[in-house]
Image: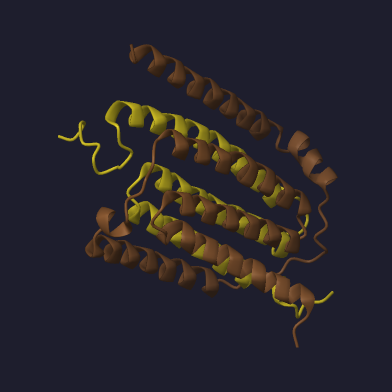
Length: 108
Length: 169
């Protein structure tokens, strides 16, 4: 086994997962359009999937459990994107905007 | 002394990070979508390094091929977004969200790096056959639930489109 290589190190993958999570949090808080918020949520899901596969590779290499969970994450992300985008298109037709700060009809 | 595999790995890591930063910080939403594409390709390369080539293929197929195209259709349907960043944000909002993001980064980093993850014994060699067998053996019920969720989401998206067409008069 070649243990000394850079890509045989768990910490790099964990760091990348945390980096994607924090980029997603920053995007959800910072962007104003709904589609950009959805894209940021995809980033968070990808960080989670990367961590699942990394733990499966390094910590418990017995079965394909982490990879199966990453496949589930991909399926859920596809379903979520379809529903969220259709709702966004509806909101755009009704309010003529997709900026989250201008939708304040249900406020108060 | 750095060999070819490591240099490609470093390239993939930087592609992922630059793509994520482009996704978050770029002004135009089209550039954000392209940054998402770059991130997905970088993560697919990392899956190859993690001995999971099937997941790399699925990543490119599902994310780059399906979700990004869906987002591109939504962007084109919902009109142009030509606003500059200084029109839709303020410095205070950016600083506050940056503080929250960096704080969560430090928190998770201190948690994750403190735990001594035990290296598993044995060689990780799960083939696509193993994944398929696990999907139909141990994870049969979640697999069926995922398919049910996807069917419900397809029907829901279609019904939303139909009812909005009816309301439009």
